[in-house]
Image (cartoon, rainbow, N blue to C red):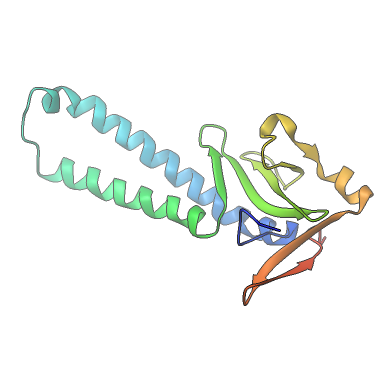
Length: 154
């Protein structure tokens, strides 16, 4: 079976990352606001062909580099940042032998939903359904082989 993701999260693994994800999202929002402020302040000068430099440009480049670093935190873990405005994040997982996403949105206390890869936010299903059904497993790549285990470890 061809898998789209190398890493598949258990519910506990995803839960353990939530404090970091909350912090990363807060910083990303700050950087986004800072970059918008920069655009508001300097877009007209850039459009007029002015050469900008100094502290504002240094701060802008630093913000871009830090933003890129935060986005890489998601990417290197194969965690999908679906919608920054809502803080919507998907963690690859396995359900009955197929890839799905554990779905979390900023403001939610816990990872309480999942959905198929192509279903999106509108297709979210409550985790209690998956718990009662009992068909959910997660896997982690180990030396090129997937090892199945429950992702709903409580």
